[in-house]
Length: 162
View 1 (cartoon, one colour):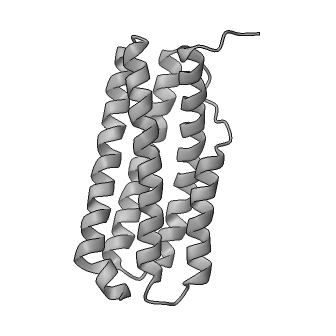
View 2: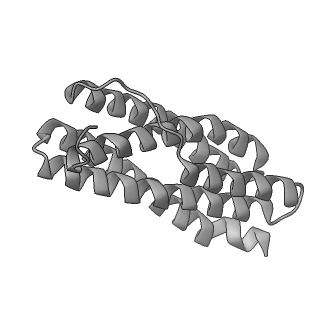
C-alpha cells in the first residue's frame, strides 16, 4: 500500500479538479443557451474558452509530476452542477432564471478557487515550482471570473430578476 502523504493528496486533488473542469466544460454551453442576458451568455462563453485552457494547464501539471492526466469522480462538483440543472428546470422562462444560473456559476467558481488555492499551496510546499506558476494563472482567471459575475449580478441580472 502506498504512503498517504501530501504528494499523494496533491495528485488525488489534481484528479478531482481535472474531472470537475471537464464537467464544467460540458455544462457551460447549456447554461449559456438557457440565459436571456446577452452579457451573462458572453460571460459563460468566455469562461468556456478559459476552461479549455485550464484543462490544458492541468494536463501540463500531470506531465510535470510524471502522472497520467486522469480524472477522479468529484461528488462536490456533481452536486453543484446538479443544482444549476435544477435552476434551469424550475425557473425556465422566468425572470429569475438568469439570476439563479449566475448564482450557480458563482458556486462553481468558489469551489474552483478553493481547490486551486489549496493545490497552489501544496505545489509550493512540494517544490513543484512550474506547477505553482500554472496553478497561479488558473487561480487568477477563476477569481477574475467570479469578480465579473458579481459585477454583472449587481449591475443588471439581479435587478432584471426582481
